[in-house]
Amino acid sequence: MDSYELTVNDIIIGISIYSDESEPVPIYNISITNISETTKIILEKIREEFVVQQTKTPEEESFEASNIQNRFKKGIAVLLRKYFPTANKKTMDMLINYILQQNIGLGDIEILLKDENLEEIVVNNAHELVWVYHRKHGWLKTNIRITNEERIRYYSTIIGRDVGKEITVLNPLMDAHLKTGDRVNATLSPISSKGNTITIRKFAVKPWTIIDFIKEKSISYEAAAILWMAVQNELSIIISGGTASGKTSMLNVISNFFPPNQRIISLEDTRELMLPDSLHWVPLETRLPNPEGKGGISMLDLIINSLRMRPDRILIGEIRRKAEAEVLFEAMHTGHSVYGTLHANNVRETINRLTQPPIGLPKQMLSALSLIVVQHIDRRNGRRRTLQIGEVMHNGDAKPIMQLDVMKDTLMKVDEPTTMFETLNLYMGLSKEKIMEDIDEKIDILKWMMKNNITDINKIGIIMSKYYAKKPFKQVV
Image (tube, rainbow, N blue to C red; front, side, top):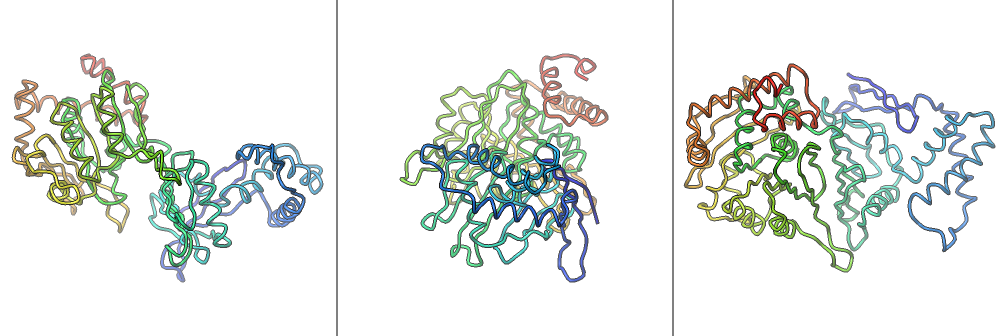
């Protein structure tokens, strides 16, 4: 079905994806092409000899991971010279990295982390093979198996240790992230009754841009131009959708349209957003309390603190609770532009989520919100699309103005915006004709960016800077 190569610490990894009649899903097979099976057997012997040689670390020596790794490298290098006396430096470094990866790193999971085609890596227990979610092929079963439950727990422990979190029998659930930004959830048995689990949602190496979304047919030119116009004119937007539907990616996409002369504060549980370098951006993160229950920083703490930082725009990773929503909508009513995500499957359900427990806002507060963008994933084929764009009316109800025609795979206009046009006329003095002219110009710029394949977030940031400097279209492009 597919095949390609990865290079991880000078180790060449062959990836092949194929169907097997005996398996319900395709297989994601990894093979190390520049280390023979014989060499692997020798490396395992070296590893065992090294473990036997190790004595207890002196008390005065730092237990930092980098110090442990350096000490291991020196010991392993001595043993490698014994078995591979003619190996050059490049080969030695590769073999050292392989042994370290397999023993004090995350083993073969580190190979999966280097594959940019993967979105999710899942360890269910030591009895099952590791699963991955591939951007192109969906869920796949790998040929990787973690040797035992203790090894899975060890991986969870070292992941947590690196970011100041811990997972124990008394605290068997952990949300953490790798230094690369990948989100990690881990559970211990018997909470997960089949065994210990690790779920890694990979951080996008290249952040999504509006041109990527248009190229993938996730959104249309007209819908993108409407969102650009809304962001330019400081209208607040909530992005809703199901799990893995692309909510955070869409939040990142609309941030492409922020002007460089405004202060942006982002609030997240784990850093996922990546904004252009040209922007005045301050990212903030929540923090869990320590084992004594102290030092925790909640999303509500960040929201309240952000309002003291003179923000022009506030980005929030996810709205979950009533207190958070109340402060955010108060911020909208006092003139701040707010952009956030929420779990809901359509425009109507988004209003229900906001007005019913556990959030339970009064419906009249919702008039401060201008647009709702709904993202959707078709789990049969992994296709992500903007399902609906709706405007919020003065009474707090929502009206879809664009909706996906699933059969045609096209985002269609289903109604004229009214409240949005009234808002832009009242505060910006824009007539309907001027608004439509503005949308058409934005479509022209987006098409020019597509034609020139401008998908780098920083290049898009520069184009937006020129656009907001009121330069004519020809100078912008």
